[in-house]
Image 1: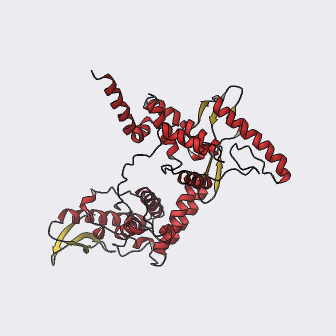
Image 2: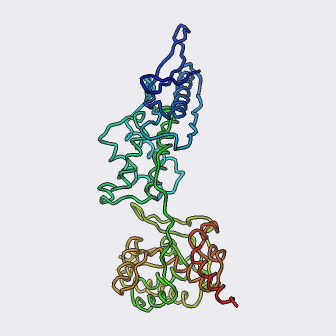
Image 3: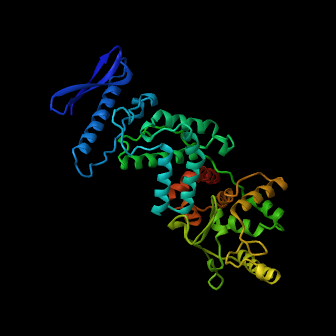
Amino acid sequence: MTGGVYEKNGKYYAVINLKDENGKRKKKWIPTGLDVKNNKRKAELILHEIIREYEIKENISSGSSEPPVIQFTPAPESLFTPSRMPINQILSNKAENDILFTEMVKKWLVEVKEGNDIELNTYQFYESLCENHIIPFFDKKKYFVSEITTEMLQDFIDKEEKSGNKHSNKKALSPRSLKHLKVVLNQIFKKAMKDRIITFNPCSFVKIPKQQKKIPSFYNEEQLKTLFELIRTEELYPLIYVTVMYGLRRSEVLGLKWDSVDFDNKTVTIKHTVIRFSEVIEKDSTKTESSYRTYPLPPEIETIFLKQKEREKRGIRKYGELYEENDYIFKWDYGKPYAPDFVTRKFSKLLKSNELPVIRFHDLRHSCASLLLSKGFTLKDIQEWLGHSDIEITANIYTHLDQERKKNIMSSITI
């Protein structure tokens, strides 16, 4: 199929050469919406997409089995503005299986859940983004899948970035959450392309703000000592101490079970996790393969574990049949494991009540890295200790700390 771009009344039109049912050649003029000035290249790209759409429709109507779904390779973003993006309804023919966009979102969720290709907590996160953000925004508008444009999606992202919605307490979503929103939207439209409802993914050109590199907060050695002194009699002291010494994630310290501890060989193995999204999820696996790691068991931590075991025995005697039997190390007297949210909230309250600098619970992991660097350990050592899958991850997070160590080295050797 051939075509070209032509000017008419100060606007560019995409003109394609078609054949009617008798094989007679005819031209079809399709408005691009672009002004003539400085827009010829954009108009040519729109023409290219229109021709591609027509060729796919002709392939389908000719009875060809399983016509390929052609992925559109986007041109540089600067060539388009959202309002001028080619849309799936630029053609007059509408797919017979076109459905409301919100119904497509729900169908995609079902497909993802039944596919069992992702972890349950990841699915719950996707489900939350769909039910609390995507569906509420588009539900009242009643748009069909083919009617969704890049402009609409960009407007949605921009509003979520600016003020969120009632489900986020009108709090703007972070660049990280917006990135996940785009990932979900992109997958939904890929399904729509697979189902042959559309031939162009309107999410391709949606822009999201760049994530600013954050320098993690942490406690230095003296601050950690102060923290331990002030909370030594608190419920969470054993858990916090173990978290800092091993640099554990919250999911990892809560996932510690008695089979993780080898008292004979003096080792602790990280092999279980407990996480929470819409519900608490217990997994006999770690975040990545490298997260599965074994540590030495020093006397201080061995004593903590032995005291936890004695506490467990007292709880069983005290509560009898009401005791919640399980193998977790860190739990209440009556056996129920600590909830992830409780640990986060309680830790924050402990810092505030003791007038300590407020950091996140996860920042205890960063504090461990800071402690290791201050003792002269390398980034490679820290990667292995924290269980990062790649040293690049470690370097991206802790390079600024390593630079401080190098400054100290330089100052100590300068003559």
